[in-house]
Image (cartoon, rainbow, N blue to C red; front, side, top):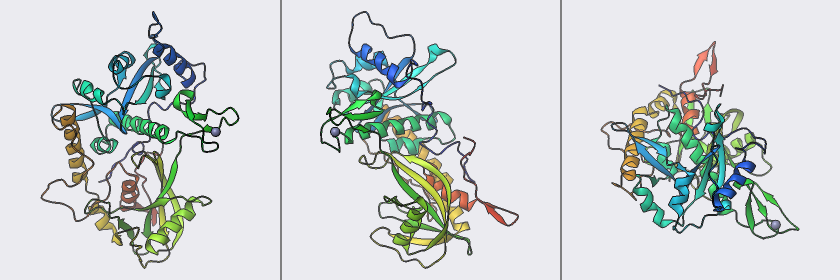
Length: 405
Ligand SMILES: [Zn+2]
């Protein structure tokens, strides 16, 4: 069994619009002008009928979420209308100003009146908001928990996850990027929070959100039909995955794949074939957006010499064992468990509990090993190799991601 997704998790953001003309009412520039007037408190100024504004709150890197459903629980982002958002912040610890809000994108329907512009804001200082929002059955949930709780066959939550990932990336970047690297002066938010700028007149350096490229590769022994899987000490028990590492300056992607594989396992790689990529906004806050760039890497030497400072272990696995490690029943169970936990958190039953993705689910029949779930590009690298079909003697990898989108 394999899963086909329209795009990798965290990609396929439904409100990431094409760059719009600055005169469009939903462009960052125009929307920001409207936002300023709305926040200025001018009497008699009504929120325009379109575009509507919706706001997503984050606290300590966690987006606001809610949950619906009786038997099957389904999370959703806790979008607030602009009016509700202003009312909520009234009298809270957060002093609202236009430069705190970050433009996320817009949804423009055929009927313009239905157009919505989406914003994100970090309200980490607003401790009193937690209780206020709790009474609306909304709470701040770790993005990783939402990721594990997402039904990957459902376009709605998949889209919301991509929006939340993009928003977290931008907000964490704003938090971590406060001063100019050239002159040391303050940076201020510019273009509705989509970039920053140095305030010093003689400098005015423009700073753009950062992306950290990471190569991730499934190393393949073609001759013996095996793949190399490895374990890191931070992995949960029984989990094995692909090798990965950061790109170094002045290095091509192919060189990074060969260098990392050699450094970590002593295996030499020849051919390197691109597979797909995935934005990864759930890494450390100092690196708010890693771009995982996935490859098949074909080994030219087979002896493994594990660098114990990097890895716990690395082993060759045959195709049948790898297929068994694609433990769909366990992924589904973890998904449902996380969705139920979010539901309980939102209803106030389990607030504050750590529900980080856990595969320590109690089950009688656990597979001896498993690979990361369908939310990770490693899953697609591994499953597309395990399920590749032989056509006229040629191996045709199935990317597992619909290439038309
Ligand atoms: Zn500067």
